[in-house]
Image (cartoon, rainbow, N blue to C red):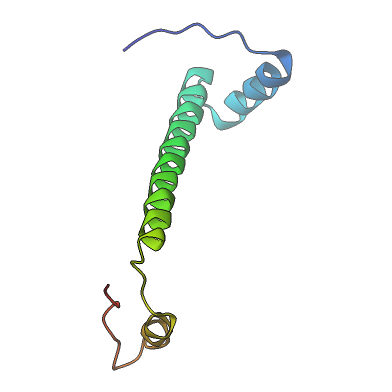
Length: 88
């Protein structure tokens, strides 16, 4: 495990100290959790961006699914005759 030194501004340090005591957790634990969640969100953001670019490229190349087919599929959700997702 690596060690990194971080200087926290008082507006971060003070609430962190209070939260640490309230939760009976170390500041180290809270900081690690915050960074872990931040990195997970950034990774998800990046994946969504990649999927968005792929979707835009798909539309540009004419790979589309008819709106009626999508709506029919969505309307069938939860019914006895639930349809399979429409395909290209």
